Image (cartoon, rainbow, N blue to C red; front, top):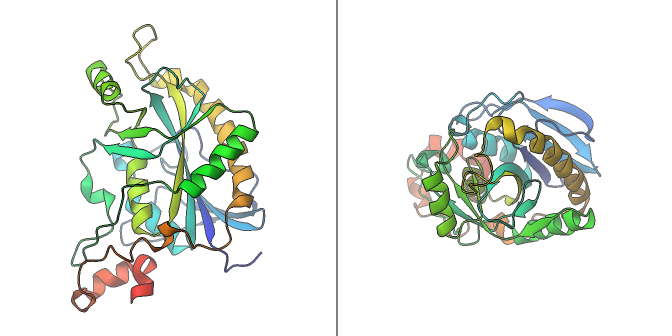
Amino acid sequence: MSETLPAIGIIGGSGLYQMEGLENAREVVVSTPFGSPSDALIAGEMSGRTVYFLPRHGRGHRILPQEIPHRANLWALRSLGVRFILCVTAVGSLQAQYEPRHIVLPSQFFDRTTHRTEHTFFGKGIVAHVAFAEPISHHLQSLLFEEANALGHTVHRGGTYVNMDGPAFSTRAESETHRKLGFDVVGMTNLAEVKLAREAEIALATMAMITDFDCWKVEEEPVTAEAVISHLVSNAATAKSILARVIPRIPTVADWPEHRSLDSALVTDKKLWPQETAENLRPLIGRFL
């Protein structure tokens, strides 16, 4: 295995706290300018590629959605050479065709969160505005779609993920409003990861694993934490089987458009960059220094 190949990151959601099949598995602890990541990263090799696994809620599910240190998580992954990320996240369905244990590969996101400073690496003297019209890497999404289909899973390509704060689940009024606006799934965590990956020039795609119908479907019991656990176990096994097939197909060269997303995004003149800010962002902007 060549250490020069771009590494692959896997961010696991509710129910996915570890990744079997990694050879030479070891823990990697990374210190970042944005604090500590959710947990130690688990590094290993799979199909000749370096893979880093990170449970966004920490092992044992110890971190609330609004407590997730997204910037530390993504900075840590980028500092280790990760240029492709596969996210797995538990979501509620907002449309009847998406049933529990189905997979949705969202292409769009809608932000209903209130923690905007956690959604960007920039500030403190360096301004950047990345293009975000197409937030997901369509190349990576295609690999997920093909391999999920090959394994016989029900997978839906496209759709909009609406990101709410949590940790409480939706009110029925919120759920109905999200449906009327045409959103497809609702979650509490993935949008910040998608935004930060784009700023870090990482290609990212998401597997949204359906656990429930939120609370809009009145003939179903409103969603509770207890009600989703059995679906989480099944969804985690499904996700692992798909990831194991996708990893060998990820390119060995990072040359997709997402890998140069800062080319037209940096606004502040380089001569004005504060030295400390620039150093803190070196894993992201090193090629401009």
